[in-house]
Image 1: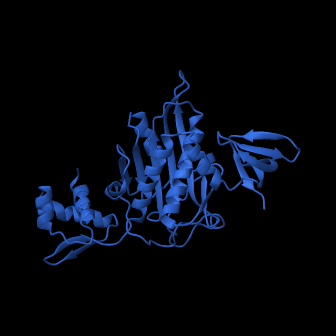
Image 2: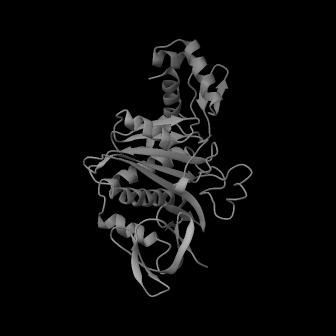
Image 3: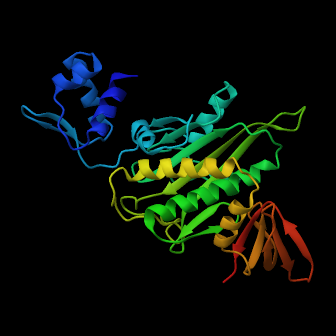
Amino acid sequence: MRIRDAVLAELLLKREQYLSGEELAALLSVSRSAVWKAIGQLRSEGYAIEAGTNRGYRLIGGDVLSREGVSRFLTTPDIDVHVYSSVGSTNTLLKAWAEDGCAEGTVAAAEEQTSGRGRRGRSFFSPRGTGLYLSILLRPESNAGAALGITTAAAVAAAEAIEALSGEPTQIKWVNDIYLRGKKVCGILTEASLDVESGGLRYAIVGIGINVLQPAGGFPNELRAVAGSIFKDSALPDLRNRLAASLIDRFFVHFRQLGDEECYEAYRRRCSVLGRRVTVLSGGVAVAEGEVLDLERDYSLRIRYDDGTESLLSSGEVSVLA
C-alpha cells in the first residue's frame, strides 16, 4: 500500500481524532518526513486535514471520494475499487483494463471526467467534486441479450441507493435514466465486447453517473431544464463514498439474479412511461407516436401506435408527450 493510501486509511479510521506524525510514522513503519509528504499530497487532492500544534493531524468534514472511503462502507466481497482525481472517461479506462484481463468486480471511479460519455454518443457533464462517476467491470456467462438486463439492474440499484440516501422516491425513464423531483439525476451507459465465435460476452462495463450535489454556478444552460441533483450541498459526511458503496452492493445483488421477479417488479414500479403517450426516437429522430401499454419481462415496451398497431420496443428511446 502506498504511504499516501495508508495515511488516509488511518485518518479515516480515526476521523475527527488527532494523530501525531510520530504515531502515524510508527503505525506505518515509515519516516515522519514520509508522513508529512503524504499529508501534503492529500491536502492537494482536496482532503481537509487540520494540523494542531503538539496534537498532530485529523481529517475534518469534506466529501472527497476515495478508495478507502468507499471500501469502508462496502459489504460485497472481491470488489477492487480504484479512485482517480480526474480521468477522461471511467468506461474508457475500464475497457482498457478489461482487455488486459482485469477481473470482474473491478471498479473505476473519478472525482471528475473530462470526456464523460452517455448513450448515443452524447457527452455526460461530469464536474469535479459534485458527482459520482463510476464504472463496473463484469464478465457474465451470457450472450449479448444480457446487456439490457445489466442496464436495468443498474437502474434499479441506482434508484434504490438514491432513495436510501435522500429518503425520496425516484422514477426510471426507460431505459436507463433516473429522475428525482422531476429532474434527471443519473444516467447509465452499458458497453460490451462480444466473442465472435461463441456469440457470448467477453465482458461488459456498466458506467453510472450521478449528480449528487448542485455544481457551483449550476448546470450548463442546455441542461438546466432537465438536469437536477440529489442534494443542493453536502448534508452527510462521506456522502459520495456512502452512495458509491450502496450502489455497488445493490447492483451486485441484482446482477447475480438477472431476470428475477424482484428486480423486474422494482423496475416496473418506478417506470415513468407506463400508460403515457410517447414519441419513439431512432437515432434521435422521431419515427412514431403511441401509448405505452406495458413493460414486458425482457424489459421491452409494448406500444400501441396511433395507427392502431402494437409492437415491442427493445432498443431506441422514447420521449414522453405532454
